[in-house]
Image 1: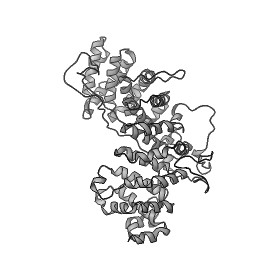
Image 2 (image 1 turned 30 degrees about the horizontal axis):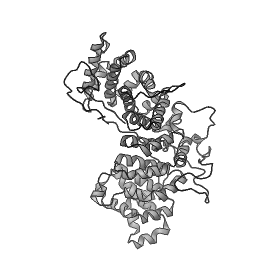
Image 3 (image 1 turned 135 degrees about the horizontal axis):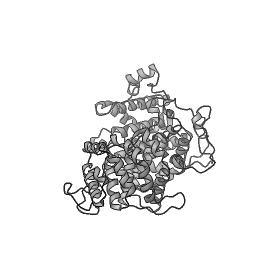
Image 4 (image 1 turned 90 degrees about the vertical axis):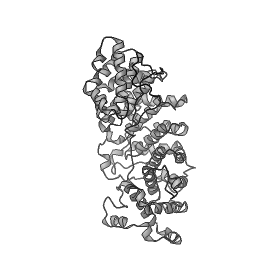
Amino acid sequence: LVKLLNHDCPDVYRNACGALRNLSYGRQNDENKRAIKDAGGIPLLINLLHKSADAEVKELVTGVLWNLSSCEDLKKSIIDDGLSTIVNHILLPHSGWSPTVCSDICWSTVFRNTSGVLRNISSAGEYARRKLRECEHLIDSLLYVISTAIEKSNIGNKSVENCVCILRNLSYRCQEFEDPNYDKHPLPTQSRVGPPPKENLGCFGASKKKKDIQVVSPKENPSSRIIPRSEPAKGMELLWQPEVVQSYLALLQSCSNPETLEAAAGAIQNLAACYWQPSIEIRAAVRKEKGLPILVELLRMEVDRVVCAVATALRNLAIDQRNKELIGKYAMRDLVQKLPSGNAQHDQGTSDDTIAAVLATLNEVIKKNAEFARSLLDSSGVERLMNIIRQRQKYTSRVLKFASQVLFAMWQHQELRDAYKKHGWREQDFVTKTIAARNAAGGVNSPNNANSTLNRPMASQGGTRYEDRTIQRQNPNVPQMNHSLSNSNTNSTYQAVS
């Protein structure tokens, strides 16, 4: 079948593509995918994509590549053999983006498949992120697709979902572009961690003061020096410009597709997770664009993976002192509501990852602020934290550790201890033996250590085995002369990974 991709007769290589698409379909077919690769299928598919002008052939080839790209072992080969062709011959023309004059997006199945391939391979580690970030015009075209889709209110489709997922993955560990070991260093100290006492924070929005970006002293953290820009940002730099926040917030406010919502929140989460100047500016931009209330409202969603991404984004945004104050003031009850109450019906559907993200956000907000610790107490948060500790067999060690550390942080506010005692709680309820031992030992495991897991920002990529079910698969064993996705006898759908 792979050899037939080189056949002179279009009907032959078209049907060979259809057969390979069927053979590579499905999560359980990684063995077939590897066999296609081992037979030299990837370079031949890319060559066919390059030389054929037939839309149906392009649709079939990109369908096979989408299936193959869901297999971890094949992602690097697709990048090495096909990234340039996939981007330059398919993505750019279909996206409508051009360095000179942009045109309309072609919302075709070929574009959907191609964005699905890129979505898959973008999750394949540092090598993939570097190759895709360095791919000329890729970031420009993805951002153009999203901004145009928002402008035309066409944000619910699969291609937009794929594009946002690619951007989310390429925003993961974005500071590695400048310093591959940035997260191995001690957390930087900010020379300005909060607004002056009389500064008006407004109602969940931007400060009235113009100078709204925290400045990190170059002596304290060289990677955060502000480099004057002599020309507009382009290429990979577009990933972390403050302007991208507007598009992600527009999606979070208007889109109903949970995959797109998760990816947009995940992109903000990742951009805010680093320590360099662009992350400082991103955290400020979310506030200035009135993004915090949009995120807090999404905490009320029933879709757990969206809530998890949103909670983690809030945790990273809270590194900014002004954001922290706004989150503490306006988001406390919504955050507490996501913690287990002990009611099985209420707690059903909330994952340990989401609980951990909420705990990390609460810890960031209350650890040096007695007012917000009091707010957590008044919102019945302490009962929920203790409920986690009491039912420890239900939760992962990470959740238990985070809950213990939040309780420990609550106990550090001495002015609240009388209030705790009125509820019948004692020091032992807040300071477990494990936490006490860690604190006594010091080091990175101490709850007071700035470099402990809980005190560091969190970044994440999309999942690795997501299957696209937008088209029903029918009659997989019946050969067809014409493999059109509009045909009722179409043989296969494709797989995608966020």
